[in-house]
Image (tube, rainbow, N blue to C red; front, side, top):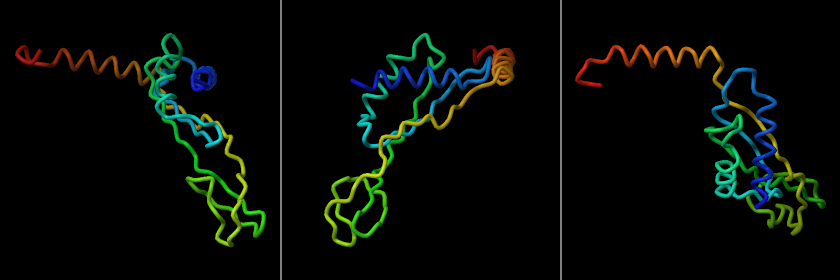
Length: 134
């Protein structure tokens, strides 16, 4: 399962891009179809690889990109969910253009200030509840 090694690399990359003191909440990635990443296997690998890392308890948002195809006969380029399609000009063998991308496109983080505000809100919220609601 190559998804586990991908998860490990993404965890390291996310940790490098996380601001000091911030907590990573969500990681956003895009993968080309040549990567052959299975959504379910990637989620499982992420859950197995993240404990004890800066990405512990994070959500992984994976977007599998469509095929980008190029027709050598007419020069047309388009995106498709299927690599085995004919071009509109009738050429039966368009060529993939790219497809091996793997990009960390974003992180959702909580800054130290946001974490402190959440903690303060939780303390105040717990103290203000009437006895019968606790």
